[in-house]
Amino acid sequence: MRTFTAADAKNRFGELLDTARREPVRIEKHGRPVAVMVSEEDYALLQQMKREAVLEQITDGQAAASAGRIIEGEALFKKLQEKLTRGAA
Image 1 (cartoon, rainbow, N blue to C red):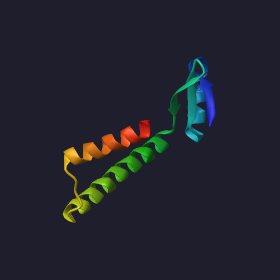
Image 2: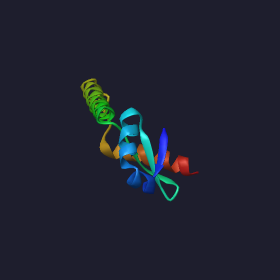
Image 3: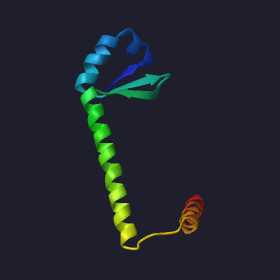
Image 4: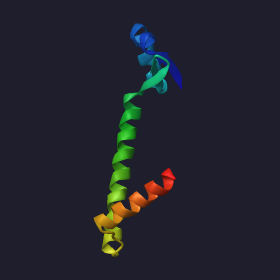
């Protein structure tokens, strides 16, 4: 992945656009990554993949609930708190 500084991205915007059409481009400000520019096609694919993942999770959750594999909210938060506590120790 090519990297542009924020100043270079501003000053060489045409080159940045051309590069982003071929591959993702990282943009850094003060040496830290702050953004990634991708082509419209890559962005659309990422959005579609996110939608499909969410729909799959919903379907899995509905199947688990239908099979009786559910957990009440308070019990869930208790389990999460226990995991957080163990992780901090």
